[in-house]
Structure formats: C-alpha cells, structure tokens
Length: 237
Image 1 (tube, rainbow, N blue to C red):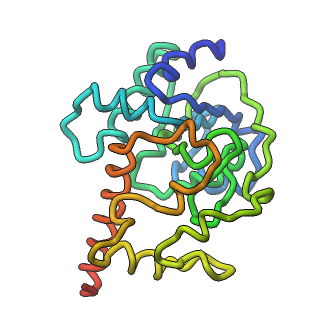
Image 2: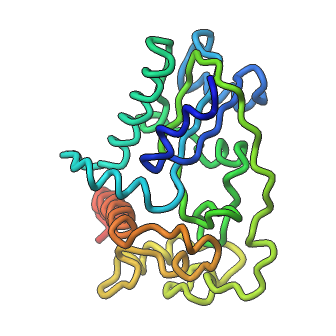
C-alpha cells in the first residue's frame, strides 16, 4: 500500500500517521498491547493516527455529528472508512478511542512525535503542542512501516520559559508540575484557565498550527467537566 493513501486522512486533518510492524516492537510494548487486546496473532501492524493544527476540528464542525465527543466519533469513522477502502475486511481492532487505557504518549514517543513539556502537554519541534492522538489500532495490514521523526525537544533549548512565567496557578514554579495547583485554579471562580491553558498559549513553538479558539474551548471544557465529575464523586466541592 502506498503512503499516498494517507492523503484521504490528510484532507480531513488526520495528518499524522505512524505504522509499526508488531514483530519489530520492543517486548514491553508488545506486552502492553497483549494485555489490552489479548491474542495478537491476527494482526501484523500497529497504526497510530493523529492530527496537527486546526484542520480536523473544521472537518468535524462541518460534519455536525450528534454526539458528546464529536472529535473521537469523527476520527474513528474516518479511519475505519479509510481502512476498509484500502484493506477490505482485513482484521483490525480499534484500541483508541476505547475503554482500555492505551499509553498514547509512549506510542507517540515511539513515532518521534512526543516530547514532554513543563505543562504536561506533548510537544514537538514542528507543531509545538498543537497536535493530538486520535486513533490507535491493530491491523492485519502490510503498510510500509514509517520512520520515526528525528527531532529533539524544543524545550531543551528554551531559555525564556514563557510557559512557566505565564501560569496563573504557579503550577510550574517548582521542579515538578503541581497537578493539584493546576486543578484548584481551574475550578476556582474567575479562573482564566477554565476553558484554556494560559501556559500552553504562551509557548512560542508551532504557533502557526494553533487550534481554533472553538477547539481549544471544547477540549478544555471537556477536561474541566471530567475534573468536576471526579471531584463530585469524592465529595470534594
């Protein structure tokens, strides 16, 4: 299968694609996959699909899906349709989105996309933090494996540290990120981070790929709802 087939996904903003042969993956990664999927014998490859920049959100907006998570639904449908058109009824198993916990950051690092940032959002030197993992699946496919991006973390060369200075919660002021400080501030009245991340906005890397404001609000509003649901379950208001 030619890499040109990925053009169908590029058009709808699913413009990051990594393909790994299972036989070439490290034992620990295979073990994690086996814990999630069980028998791996029906599959030859692991396929990771992501998006960078605002194009995916714009395609999702046009689709007008009636669902609580239109990005997940759109991405899963788009990838399933793409796979069927090129591989027919070949075996596949969608791992993400899904109920099982998939270490997307580890897979992203394997693809060369993901480096850690001080504010705990993956970053790379091409797109900054304006990318995300959308679909991970096992497949009985024979796509030419992709090469990892050869890139260094842009954070290692950053001397001004605008993300740390900008954080209104001071969650980045110590050597380690304070999740508690971040959550407390996000839940506070008048929080500037209720539907965004001020630190993320201040990072200069990849700004030309920055998401549309509507996508930023959607993503952070969803995460805040999850935080509030968790807090309510603990009786912590």
